[in-house]
Length: 327
Image 1 (cartoon, rainbow, N blue to C red):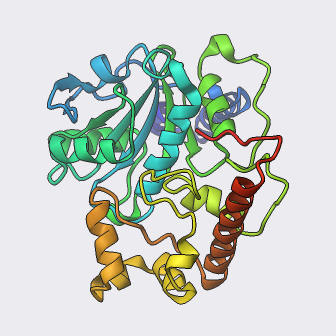
Image 2: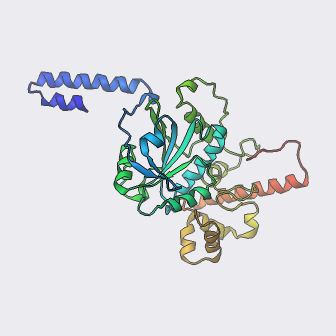
Image 3: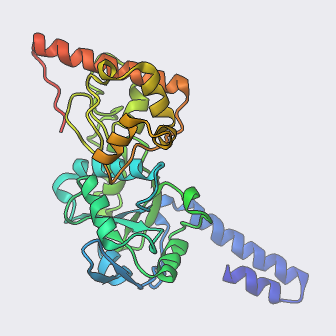
């Protein structure tokens, strides 16, 4: 913005015009050079002290981000809405990136509610999602966290409206870009890898998959919804994850109960619904969030869970030649 400021300091109109022209040319050249060229200059990332979930004190730039490629998200542990799903999706990304995590790529989740989020709470939160040992959950002094948030573009006024974006940052080159945890995980993994200049021209091996059941011929309504909104925390027959295994859930609960729980889980908890309360007690770190699904969406998801449950039981009876591998 410096050019603009100096332009307006000049008296003559002609000069103002040329000053603006220079500014436009600068702007256009920045836009044209492509997304990966957006850079933070040295010193832009605040080097303030932060505390990890293990109670270690680190400097945000020197110790956390410098010299590494990081996947940064903003969370708070009392968030009952979309943030648990973002963390769960990122934990799927962590699986996808495999051994490179903690070596080439690092996950950093920053609490935007540092007054509440003690290291212990963050530790419990991370454990609920089964995250790896190199994933940092950071808290700190309110003003330090505010500065980090502001510089990193997380500027919402209320806790509940913070953005659910992921920030990819190369602390070697200063390049950064925004991404979403709700796209295809394979594509997000490729975006992470291409933050490394050396890998920018790698052939993209990942075929675009709709999610874990992409190799499944039954392309059902509700599948994409399940993969994006439910699959981060639940499997159907694959065992408990962040939340319970949903295999056979339609034989244990009525469709009406399931629909109302999927749509407004917090209402059932408020009404002291015994099943909702026992689930909250069993999975204390992450409660079932309100995902804003309509009744129509919910019935699609339930139909999908039923179909997958049926498919799994059919397969036990007559094992087919091909097995699906899920991890």
